[in-house]
Length: 156
Image (cartoon, rainbow, N blue to C red; front, side):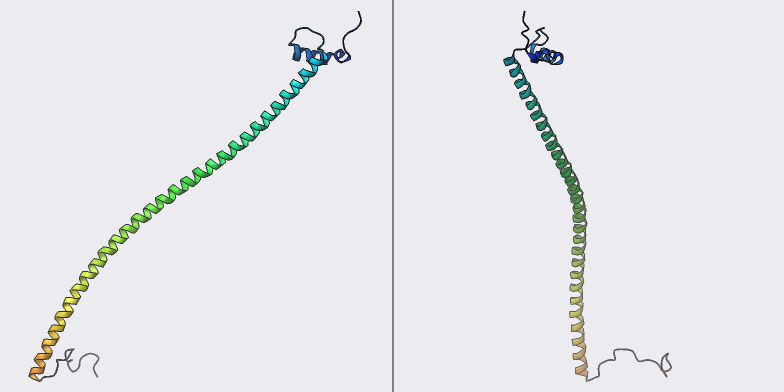
């Protein structure tokens, strides 16, 4: 019987690999050339598909890492904003307390101003009456300070 095995099938490692790959261990010694090419093309297609899947996986992992980083940055910003909001709230409460104190003080000052205005009006009326009384009597106005005694401290 002539040798019908092609030269490709004479290599034992290749025969074993093709047998396990293509025939799943069915015991055939050689794969016909057309089927061999189809299996090689399928293996190449699967390898390319696997490589594309790995590249897609890497791209997705990079995108996930970017998103996680952005999420951490947003969480840090949110925490900082919460702290700032708390500080602003404290400042607002302190400012409101200061405003209330200033309003009370302004009311007190307005009350004092009214009292001083009343006193000023009373003093003006009193001075006016005294001036009229002096004018009627023809006397000189009273001195503003009491006369000092002779020999008082600071006198020569």
